[in-house]
Image (cartoon, rainbow, N blue to C red; front, side, top):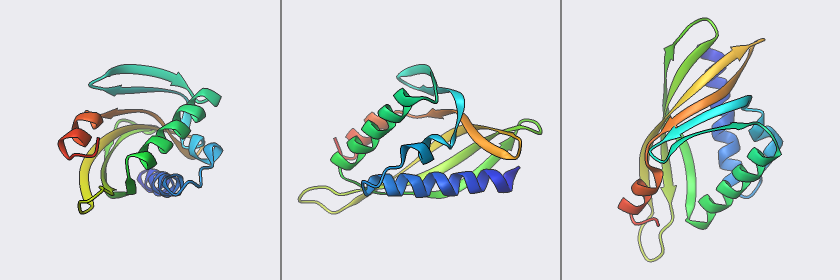
Length: 143
């Protein structure tokens, strides 16, 4: 399972980078996710479906990332916590690099914990837990 989940996050990183350049294929991005998902952050817990609304929200999110100067998003490390034969938590350490007007670029490290299910040989993200992204961006003068 670990090998297939690593490949999933290689694709995730590649799709994220493409989206930052404006080359968004929302069907490819949506293919990373299960039919239903749960997300938790300090802002609360939300549930959703992998549908057209998710694609619209994600496209809007990538436009927002570009608007605030997100230049690059790369994975530093992926650590796994197996749950059973079909599920794991992938602890993904990301580095985001932002362009700032009249300042040098800034790189910010953060972690997101993804819940992954692998059925039929194909892993899918069915949830994630993240920190307070907005507070982190404010702290570094991005927003």
